[in-house]
Structure formats: structure tokens, C-alpha cells
Image (cartoon, rainbow, N blue to C red; front, side, top):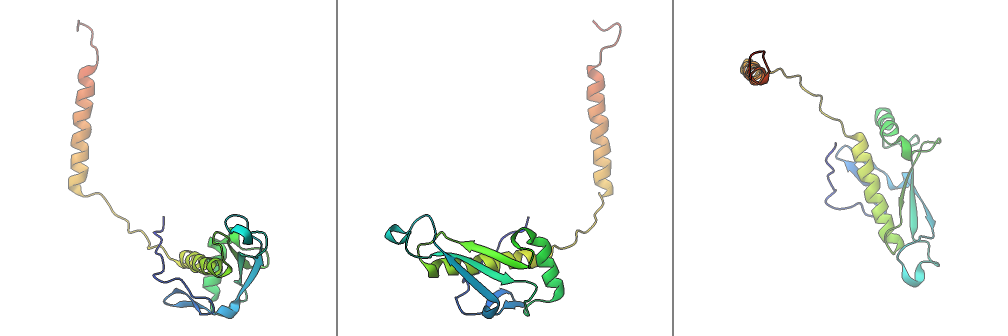
Amino acid sequence: MVARKRNPSPPEVGEPVVVREDVTIDPDEIAYDWARSGGPGGQNVNKVNTRITLLFDVNASASLSDEQKNRIHRRLSERINREGVLRVVASRRRTQMANKRAALARFAELLAEALHREKPRKKTRPSAGAKRRRRVEKTHRGRIKESRRWRPGDE
């Protein structure tokens, strides 16, 4: 499992979203859709559109290479629709701006996880000492089990 690293400062609205050192998403490539949100909000809950859906067209992005786009499609396929649009929804906070910041932070985190490459595993072999210790332990365990066995004449 990938250890999640939180960005020290969440992306600010209207500024480029820095996913990694080498990947920055232009804010013009991100669209937003607002709706009424359930949950906290007091008197505003039925009047103000605080729920946000962040929409990012992966296929049309000029900020990503073809390899990065393919990687995002593979890793985030359940969040991307047929048209290639990635959706991130935020509705926990009481204000539009707070939900927008939360959606941008989650968006950056999702892309960073999708673009992360695992290090290839180095093949290792047990040392000669480890093999010897294993054999000695197996022999010892076998003798213990053999001593429990019933033999004719033992009573």
C-alpha cells in the first residue's frame, strides 16, 4: 500500500495545482459544478449550493503526457467516465470555498497516487546460514514429533 503524503499546503483556488515536482495542472483545465449539499450548514443548507464536483478532462489535458494519462486512466478508472472526465466531489464543509479547497486537495492527492511508481522488487535469496538453520530446525522438530509416536511394546 502506498503511504499517503499530504501536501504541506493545499492548492489555492485559481493557482496551478502542483501534483508533484514535475506535474502541474493549469487551473483553466479544471471545471466545477455546484449543487445543494446535505449535512451541516444550518439555515443555508437548503438555500446555498455548497456541494462541489471538480471535473478534469484527462484526455484533453495539456499538462500531462500520454503515458501519465494512461496511468491515470488505469489507476482511477472508477472515477473517470466514458468521456475521460475525472470527478472529485466535496460536500463536508459549510462554505463553497472550503469545499472547493477540499476538492482541489483531494484531486492533487488522487493524481499523485495514480502517478506514483512502485520501485521494482529486488529478488533476494536466503543465505547459506539461513538455509542451514532452517534444516537444523526441521530435523529437530522431526525428532520431537518422532518421540511422540507410539511403538509396539511401549506401555
